[in-house]
Image (cartoon, rainbow, N blue to C red; front, side, top):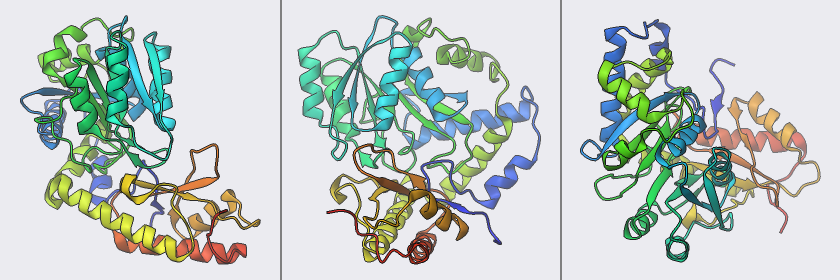
Length: 372
């Protein structure tokens, strides 16, 4: 194959050659030139959510989940009480990591095929004044459902509770405006819709709550308040930074700006989503979610009903033709997922659909129709 396989996953993603080439230079972690890259990236990240006046952004080594855990530990007091509306796998992960850090957790179950309802969150907050924070997964990539960030933020503000947003797969694609949507923390990562490479997360923390975060975290490495204070004094990371990842992210952010920022990225991902769903529908596949609750980030499809279908063979067939799919995250029905994000366009999505068609043919499956 004369090109890298295209990653149709929720991250890591397919990246551009420019982004890859940015990793070919070595950087000293305390060097002034590298510190300038870190500062520039932090400044640009704040601009994406219009958060320059209201928030700081704190980068952290590791996968996005590292930053979710760090945000909860830093922002939620040790005697805090977290409410997690749960409509998928990443909601469950947020609840689990909060509980493991000793925070009190209440889970609000929501069906996996529908968004969180702000009115239900409001009812829970009104009924239990001990709840201090809500954790909302903006785009639950277990299914691909988009949860209503602005509406939940308004409810939290009205009830005087904190809001922590896992925006891992929505940041830089779906609109988020800190000037009109209040959140105490919002978490994203380098290897998602900014189309950098994995290895770095970052957390926006509201300036109004920052001082109260001192001493909350029980972790040295994942204390975002300490990381912020140290960076403010020195311009440096406290511990060895992922230098190549940061350099790649700086290049990816430059391309994000050149493309036209968040609106342009959303438009491309939406075109990818439309090409994917139209093509898969022609093959008989049915998405798990109704279109009105589906974010154009990753699509969950029902598995074909044909007895010859086996996800591993299906995956390998698509991979041999240049496309990497993603397994399903649901337990009650068999599914698989196809991402719409990364440095790809509608042409690549149509090629992916063609690869799926050839794979079905190879497996002796007439079409992708699921069980009715």
